[in-house]
Figure 1 (cartoon, helix red, strand yellow):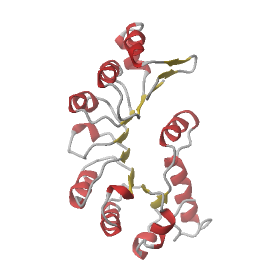
Figure 2: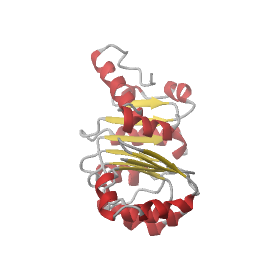
Figure 3: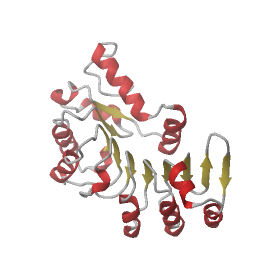
Figure 4: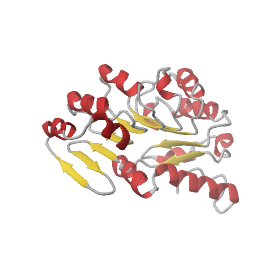
Amino acid sequence: MSLCYTRLFYWESTYQALLLSPYDIVPVVISHRPPAFFHAAVRHLLAFTPHYPARELEMILRHCTGIENLWIFNTDEKLMPLVESLPLKRLYAAFKPVSSPMFSRLTHLQLGVNLGEKMDSVRSFVAALPVLTHLSLSFDMFESEGVVFAMIHRILESPSMLVLIIFDNETITWAQDVPPQLRRDVRFVLMPHREFAEDWYAGIHHGRDYWSDAETFIAKRRTGEIDSLKCLWP
């Protein structure tokens, strides 16, 4: 089951789909099921809108304690203990990376926060994630291409890293500036920005999202079906 919580509260399962609005209906929905139901049933939560009410989201997080796939763009500190207690495997977040046990199970991570020049701290943070294999960032998180290219090269020193995606709407321009050594690493992929909420939803229900697109692209570069030096998807 997935919960999509933007301007509407969306609840879908194999057997039912409910579209609920406005925000104040969230307590009503929660009250109609025991906490054990939400713990066992809900594995995916999208909280994409940055200005939604934290109170309702806090209520959802307190009940849906089995979430493995979370997209959250609210940086309210009082929510962090609830997020940290989740058995997360995939996280899409807009807060500065910090060391926390919550990341120990992560295999897929997208960071959406301005990192400035803190290259070493980001690299150290990623290196400390024991099972992370997929990472995505945006060029606008950095102040210069020199910073981002240097950091990417260092992150890819990790043998466990399988996919590293950089998003930007000027991918063609950026692709021309990619250093040769980085271009030869097929795990590095440049992608244009996309409708991330729709992409997240498609990944859950249809098994295809930007992660799977990158995996297919990388596989074709490895086999020579696509020029191995081509880092710009598709």
